Length: 196
Image (cartoon, rainbow, N blue to C red; front, side, top):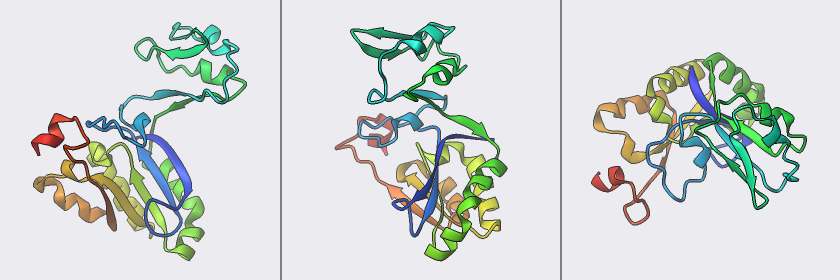
């Protein structure tokens, strides 16, 4: 099992050609400029799209844990109270709520990825694993990379370079390419980055 935030088909900015990007859960940095903050937590995250929300309060009324409330017309979600039942998501007629994050078998992920195999072959594309930081789930990531390569897929991994230490560098051989995301102490308040 591997914890996935979401799978984006027809991605063109995460490596060569047409790709499917699998966004994995988990990152220890929490950088303020993170493009995918919903991937930082290893737990599912409730996303609220205020452009779609009509403040009908159906989500609030349907939540058995009372984890949702509106204050001065603004949506608030208490992640500590939420149990992930998704009743709010199911009841929202505007599709303003999404629960991002689920544990998936590698076969299910690769089944979704293989739907666009013809596009990958024509464009020299493939699959990219992004995040968060994919190497937070190193064992599962290496397994799915090997399975993807066995299916003839070009594989790429977007990594935060400082997280790969010398003892882990051999793991990069499971991927056809890496896309490095560099962090610097000028921009990141994380003590772990500054110490490295």
